[in-house]
Length: 419
Image (cartoon, helix red, strand yellow):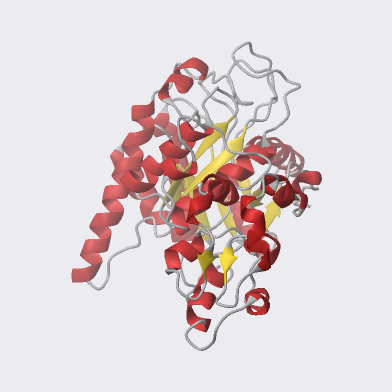
């Protein structure tokens, strides 16, 4: 093995993979067994952070950064003059096993540029997963990127050996995709996604009848959209995410703020800042839809199509719907308690449980874990609440912003090194 060349490939292909953020959590339940290596359930995936602050998993690489496509937003686009490299299947397997044994990683996230066509590339990705599972007895987490346009047979095999599959929508709207990646089309992305969705449902049904049914993408599938490369508003992006959650049963939709690395008149200029705060607000909105019972059209509407960057989406909704407050913690239903700014899922459950045994007050709320600096303006107690007078104050928004600190003062953290 030529170690210097392998190290060079790793530097090139790990760097090229850093723009993909859809790899943060496993959700897998693959257990270790005698004679095998790894376990995706005990501690999930180890995480690290890219230099621009995103959470990534180790080992996160591309199989190759050669690509037949010339997508304007992609650093690996065919017309970009960069160093190119490609791993062999055996090299990826060896790296994964050796890094795992050295405790560098607990799983593999493998994506790729397109070698020749979709099936040729997907076949190599599948061979990596198959070799790890069958020849190396590797039971750690494997996340494979599905290649748009890959055949159903290859998707079937990929789902049998990987924990999670994902396919990037890349640009939120079809018109945006046509503008920046005219060689691609949305139908090629949706087809593998639909196949995996149907396969998961089928294997789940078979599991009810037969005891031994192989795992089929046990950690589900996810997707990713680039934010800020085209001019979609946040409402459009949220609605696209909502559509794919509802119709494709996705585990996660990831949002990747566009990183300007290429000069192209169709793209924002190279001096444009990465929209990290916007990306964060989209994740918060995503959380509201998935766990807090908010509908996409409640978070934003055509009159307010962009998320408020000064305050989080739940607080923004509360300020637009002050007629729904104050909420009496002793009598309100669980869903309404979830909508109070400063109260999260766990705290809401604790409140519902605790109020069965005592009359709640502000001190209890603090002990239950609420962010009282925000929640205190929106709740009522049987004993009253002196902060409610601010609800009708014309400077209420300013008061709330003044009482909170943004975590985006220091957006960039150091990336951990593999060596």
